Image (cartoon, rainbow, N blue to C red; front, side, top):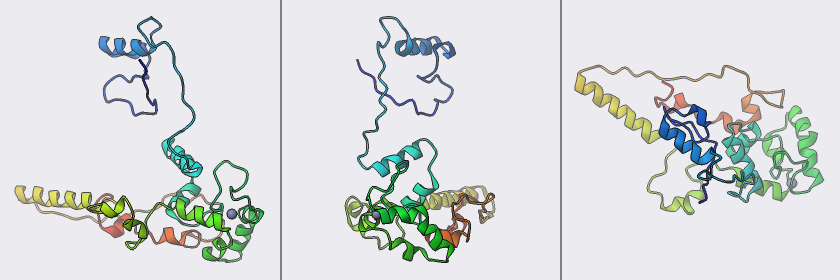
Length: 236
Ligand SMILES: [Zn+2]
């Protein structure tokens, strides 16, 4: 018998996790279950192989991105790539590697200082990004998985072409919650008070660029509607 599992799990509620030590079992049956995995008897598993090479994804950048998400440690750079906003490295750069995959010295020079100089001199992102090679630009486009416009041509491709309903954020959920609140109040003859939420950054953003605010560093990001602007109740 072969068992496959991923230990990177939330603990079960008020129960014993399979990755617990037998001494921490809360019941006899939990202890027996843990013994099947960790016991040294002939009834327990005989061998453990740890699989360390991710095989889910052929794309080295997307694999690195998923790994960061899995570890709860998404880097700012990869967050910017997935949103399609300005980044400090060129489009074919893989986190942890020494040079961009395109192999162009000019692209390496961009991320190693030239872009910083241009930014300090007041250059705008489109002009900076246009200096990337074709391979970097293509890869940058592929990394952007966040839609910015209802006219995005990807909506006409599979599998989105057959989607019955595509909506931004959690709009239907928040709308349903508001309807429920109204119904709750109606049935109990209560008045409804709507509170509009507002979100404010409490800590300065960590960024490699010293000059300029969010608008300058990531104009597209700064245009993102804030939750309060969308009027839903998540932060209300
Ligand atoms: Zn390049």
